[in-house]
Length: 306
Image (tube, rainbow, N blue to C red; front, top):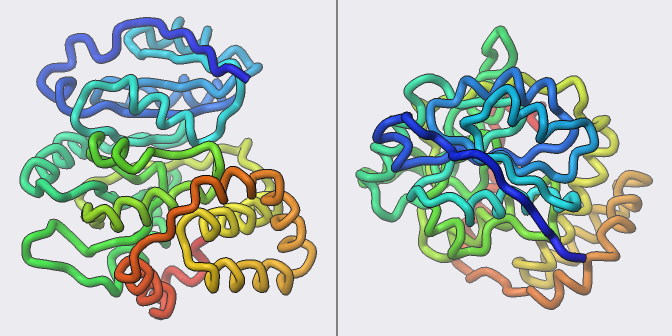
């Protein structure tokens, strides 16, 4: 099926030097109210890629935020919509956001400075504040305590993972590894990108002074469905990038986790041929780093993080 799209408006006009350095990329579907409400918080040009919404998202955005570039897709392609936006952008850095999140004042300018000072930094993971109370996301503690450690020549702890709405990337590095793909879709799409960036020699770092706000949408998928989809994504990521022993472990884990795991396994089956065609296991060094991360205890404050 073709993925036709149309675009409108001129992004970021009049936003100064920052507009030449960084673009905010948002993928959305059927969350018109949240997106219209939060879009004005962003301090850089925004490209919104609409995954075939049926609630009038595109028209509402063009009316309320005419400076924003809106790209409408003819079908829902999941997280790959962010890659559509990345290819349309022309700035060296890209800040991902969700329709229920935005970057704090000054965060994007700070991120640009950090990237400029660290030429091999491929991805910057910022701290996330949740809800009107601005509670620290439990993931912040996980990233800060990364067992990969911190080097003197890098801006923060080394990572091998991130969450989409809290990540800023070097556009060239992101596109070099193919961006988000049409195999994983959503959720759990970040792991394959993180593995590929790390394997290609790019650094991923946690920089807490770069901050994002996340006000979780009331229209989120039920927790049970999301857990099933994460099982599916872990299986497909293993097929794409991990050794056969790891694929076997993911299969065993899925089967042993009951109905949820079996549903995730069934959901992965239609995408197995595509995953096998694109299979390219990461290096032993990357696999060893991943093993270090998974064997390390999580901070107590992050035990309930998804």
